[in-house]
Image 1 (cartoon, rainbow, N blue to C red):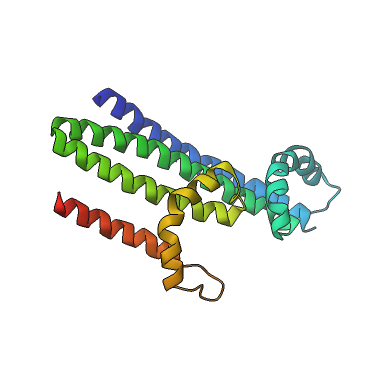
Image 2 (cartoon, helix red, strand yellow):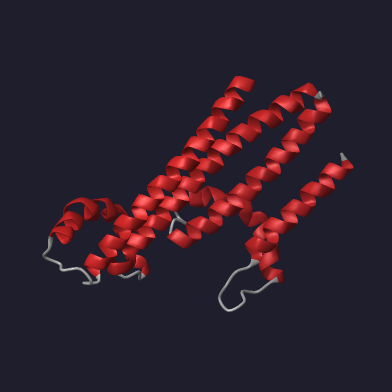
Length: 195
């Protein structure tokens, strides 16, 4: 078990270091693409040809997904960097989550049935908070009707509906997920005090 946790720690460190390098390079390339698209660099020069041949094909999937959201073509390279940042952060989150889940499961099994019950409660609230986070992110990027967006909605709608009745949208902004996040944390602590 310790070997596996050590491997996951090393993997997390590697992903973080690699992410930093990739994000720096992506930001430089995105700045070049932005400069070409906004005509700050000669659109017929070498840099522009490089951007059209190498960078634009990489940006095409991001443009297809986010192009309908009203983001200008000149700003799309920076949105691609933001998407890349979210993917890298997601990778660190997943590997760290797997590591923490393994450590929690190992410690829970050593404490017997009470430990397993505490683990089940912790994982239940963790899944609900993760579903809430996924639901918010998918609403930002237009993935509400994707498979993962629908699953997150199914897991969270039962406790968001009463909160929405209590808190109407403020200026078009739905703050019920923020309140739900904090309430889930409070309920989890209350359940652990009862156990």
